Image 1 (cartoon, rainbow, N blue to C red):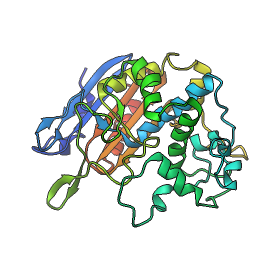
Image 2 (image 1 turned 135 degrees about the vertical axis):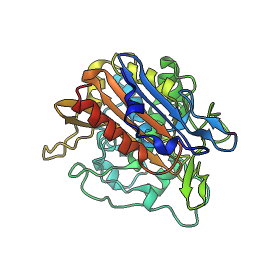
Image 3 (image 1 turned 180 degrees about the vertical axis):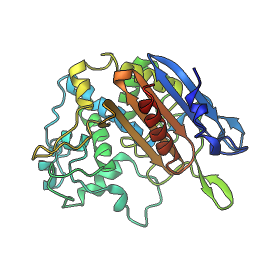
Image 4 (image 1 turned 30 degrees about the vertical axis):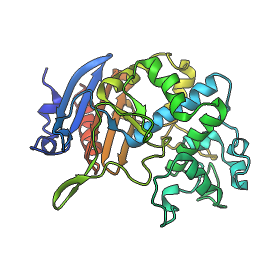
Length: 335
């Protein structure tokens, strides 16, 4: 059987000399079916990308934040329909109508914190800083539950809710309750000066002069919406856990892949940390991630027990288009 990652010839721009790289894989039945690593994880040290390279996966992190909430739900420590004002007592009145569920499926209407960062801010924001910014907002984009609008703010607040409910730092909770139990020993929520990222990919952006360092930004220290670094090897362990009940029972896990609805019953094709749809009669669960110097894409086809993963350390949305093209190829050819 040919390696379709190579056969489709979609990674040409990552194969040139001295450019940021990509690590891609197709998992099937709990193992690597195909994999491809090309380009460099670090241009300065000329370290090649590999299956153990840890990339910042940006918004693909949201599925892990959602899992933290689901773990607390399983333990009876939280209810999805609790208003967030119960966790943040000094939150403005809008918090009384925004629930944990609305944060998880992006129907809260809460303001995007990236749009309200004061121009004088130079130090990277943390999740707690997001809360302080939002506390001064007395309106929302729409009445909670009446529309869908993707929200990084919501997942930053979810990280803080995990801390308030569990009594643990968010990064510690994730390590102790998700990463360590699954053997994802190199996966971390990166905190400058606190955690080390092993086999770390450095992020870059493409300019007229070539590739320049673009590893961190003002929002890179916010953990709940996109702070995880992981590798193909570790992500395989996560992917396999989603077929079982290692972390939570199946009924709770299935909610993550069930389309949320608006108050009028309209489905929104987003569950808890995952986009959900059907393509060519096959259930497709997926998410993209983009930040200053990284982009990533995951396409899960659980009915086929197949998952496509692409991590890159450059700006742009190349991985998203490649993932869609490969997914179409897999489904069109009944792979």
